[in-house]
Image (cartoon, rainbow, N blue to C red; front, side):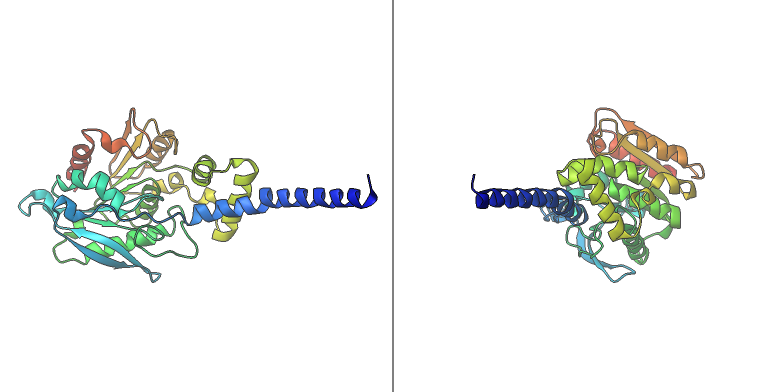
Length: 306
């Protein structure tokens, strides 16, 4: 083999190795990081008017200058005793108010509540932030804004505001309740207990890349971006500070978040004035609502704790 050909092949091999290393150790983790921080916004495919609900499009200002978008829905019957209850509904990391309305709207509307469905930051029709999804920490500001919004309405009874949330929204709700304890009751469906264990399980599903090497590098990048670690995003550690009535729900067939996490959170609610746990058989992640008794059970919990 000629000397120039050997040199060319050697250089080409080095370039291929270096390029492969860059893909493995830099490009793929960066793609994974961006996918985790800024998932595509869900389109609004379902609206309250499709359910013949009386509603208004509303803008909810946050303390850090965002304008969240929501739907403020009037009760079905103002003579219904439950019309005095205002229920705030919050989605998970990859959902929106439209998805929540489609899956939970009729069930809660038929209980007679006044409702607020809204998009948290980086989701639905609400704006993006440079920090991106924060797994419940910054989203606490969105819940704070939603509570202030409904309590500012003259028709809302401040002592009869409850909050329902699923998945990441449920984690944010637990963080919110631990900090403020200023609503009548909360219902958290499918929250994780410890953030470091959750993200190791969630990374491959959300990014499409394996945890080993790719996930570990990606999460290190994300934690540097955030300025906190995933271990800090652990509702089970904050649950001891919750004093208001709390209902924990989880599907026993959840592959996204370990169903045992719900029991861990429930056991940590040692200072809640009332706590309830329902682990639903044969239901996956945020699928418990498919149970026929789901909405009436939640309604009974709210009624008993107002």
